Amino acid sequence: MFDTLSDRFERTFQRLRGEATITEANIAETAKEIRRALVDADVNYTVAKRFANRVKEAALGRDVLTAVKPGQLLVKITQEELAAFMGSTHSGLNIKGKPAVILMSGLQGSGKTTHSAKLALHLRTNMGKRPLLVACDVYRPAAIDQLEVMAKRVGADVFTQREQKDPVEIALAAMRHARSHGNDVVIVDTAGRLAVDEDMMDEIARIKQAVEPSETLFVVDAMTGQDAVKTAQAFHERLAFDGVILTKMDGDTRGGAALSIREETGKPVKFIGTGEKPEALEPFHPDRMAQRILGMGDVVTLVEKAQAQFDEESAKKLERKIRKNSFDFEDFLEQVQQVKKMGNVKDLLAMVPGMGKAMRGMDIDDDAFKHIEAIIRSMTPQERQHPDTLNGSRRSRIAAGSGRNVQEVNQLIKQFGEMKKMMKMMNASGNRRGLSGMMSRTGIPGGMKMPR
Image 1 (tube, rainbow, N blue to C red):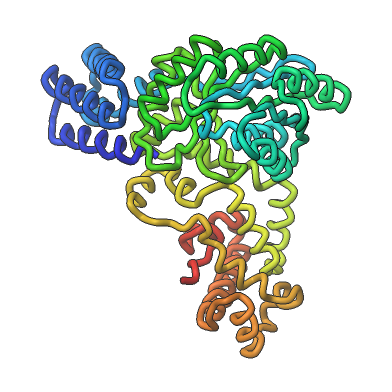
Image 2 (cartoon, rainbow, N blue to C red; image 1 turned 120 degrees about the vertical axis):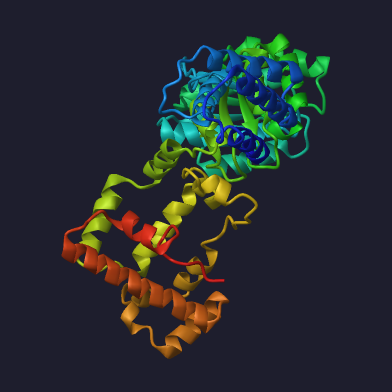
């Protein structure tokens, strides 16, 4: 996301690297380039001009330290203004009531149903809630079926009334069901249309009046650019929503919607959808997003993703096995699966400072680990626990079972042996920083080079 905008900002600040001092002239030129970059990213011209003027005013009023170069200063100011432009700090969900109600709104095709389920998973795994998904889209074919399938995937309860055609009555019945079945959050998935129309607005307004949600969220496709902002304004005028979920932020989007919605509606972006998997929902942090746009990475989010998957007990168990030099393919497979849960590999690497630019244009398979997994899963439990038993005939059988060739199997086993030697050396030297240090030496998550 934001690759085009990041490239334009980078070229703009590069021009200042040869400047010895900051002047009104080079500040004005930088502000003009920032405005052009934002317009190219599909930000409304008036909004882009307003932002560029903020950067210009902040730069002209800043005391310049002799140790700070003009380019560095403008990057810092732009980062601060970008963060403020998008809302400064993360706006969390307002979960109040017994049960609390979250009303999902938006056009058809924006991703309401999918992101209702993603939100349920977020509430269940990160906030300890027991959400109930409610199917109030009685018009779109298979909408109820889709919500049931998604609810099963994320481990959430679902409420449907297939014979009932009044979404208000469905929502009220769902509230009664939640109270009697111990669900503390109700997520109401409403119907959408291909465009804003009076019937849709009237229906969702009646649902809102009936269930009195503590949180009304507007779900919008980020790839629609300025149209996303116009649609958000139309919904906000009628519905007075509390926040926005921007979907398809992993796609070929120029990012204008993410930058403009807060400015235009006064309401914060609360979450962004970054992929198709149920876990691909991120809380929106304006300050971190500003860092990503300016190529600074986002280490905090990366650490949070890791912490969500690697629990303390598992880490201690892994450390004990490494100390005893008994780390085997079973353990390695478990680590691979945990890394995969963190999200798209390319997005994760882009959070490392400097890596975003280095990987731009590179095609990194989201299933980059699948060949390694296939090889390990073709081993018997005995072979995974005792890699030294893997002789020639066993390797041939594993290759045939995994659909890979014997050379790839040999390569994986060889690299695994080298990794274990490294662990042994780390233990001998007293360096027990764990698997992360060993991974960094071998280049990729898991310490293995991907079989090709």
